[in-house]
Length: 140
Image 1 (tube, rainbow, N blue to C red):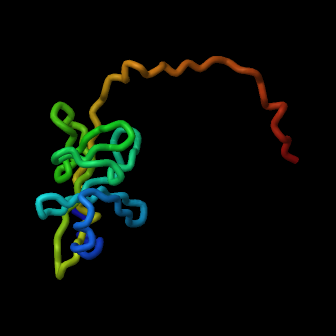
Image 2 (tube, rainbow, N blue to C red; image 1 turned 45 degrees about the horizontal axis):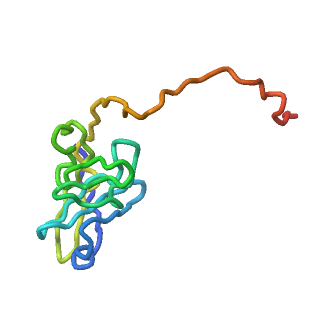
């Protein structure tokens, strides 16, 4: 198990101002929620096509992706009822001296179950095209 990597996110009083927000540390995007006097942190990247969960909205206990409306529980990262096998990583949080910390090294494992294609999705059909190699600049 990796050693804890508690990262200082900021003052709790400041972070309480928004019920959902995106925070970024290095390459890690987190959707941070504050509801019922509790902070929770899940991955800020939607399983579907990488939408920004922290820029979505809350629907009860679920973070809703602003791109295609996939939902993930704000504490566990699990998908909504019927899609529990879709899960984004969830991160432990703690409060010390009025500051919020997120453990970036102890995230739960994300999972994605197979889904049927959307009924309106068009199949990708590749056909032979013209040879454009002669139009490309030649290297010397």
